[in-house]
Image (cartoon, rainbow, N blue to C red):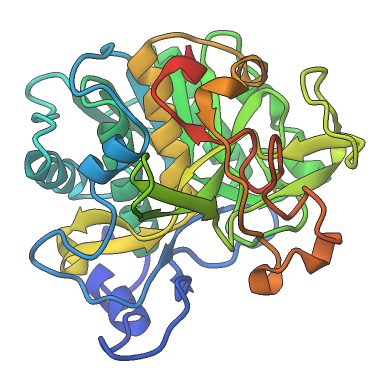
Length: 378
């Protein structure tokens, strides 16, 4: 039996999707369950729109390229890895529907662009399937593709969403040659999680992680590690400005002040004595993906979208910088100065401080800002 749960993937979404005229928050429900101790959850949520046969009603790969001033062609063939729990049986097929729609080129096992392995690095046996995590995998590979059509993709599937299994996926990804590893999952930082720090502290790869989808709260593992690029989220919409886009802090994007991790020397904010998350951000709301089991095209939300997108940008440049290098290139990012990520989006929870309110310069919800071309990731 391949499925971890008796209900099919489509059944998961039947429970979450509302009628088209229903009133709903942009954060309707999580794709993955709240984790037990020692486990993480994927950091994405499913909105209120029914799946469609065509890609409308959300941010496309072309929208992301436009908003973030990405080159129309070119890029390195970096191997970007996705560290993920459980198997996504139709991942390669769903990914290539997305890539064909936006003219990104095929990325298949046959042409050497796509590879999926278990946490030991073998093609099989693969883990069982869990519905929400399967969609998370689709989101991850789609966002890497949107940011870096030329990158090769390695998906390393953990046996579970446990700390140990996912740390193993990171180790395996780097052993197999990945120089960028994206981690779209998290849990509240804690002493047990910190024992796996070594897997996320690499000189041979750039490690990227989602900052969380619960707003301003305790910092999230593994994004909290100083060796990791912590990626927050924004709300991105078209407007009439010269850029053509307006951007604000996503109301649910994670930020926090660590209770455990010392402040890296390159982080200079004043109101958190330890590590502050995040470092950088990208769109995390209303991002279109394709998943056949869920019914087709639909928008999702979460820093699980922004983290693999940022990972793809590192891959496109083909460099291997440390997280601190971003702080030397802040002028190559779009500074996000509006929005808050506390309850109600008012900034009251942190006294309208930078820890939960976007402002000029560094702030915790959006970090240093969002991509403006590739220069910040070199």
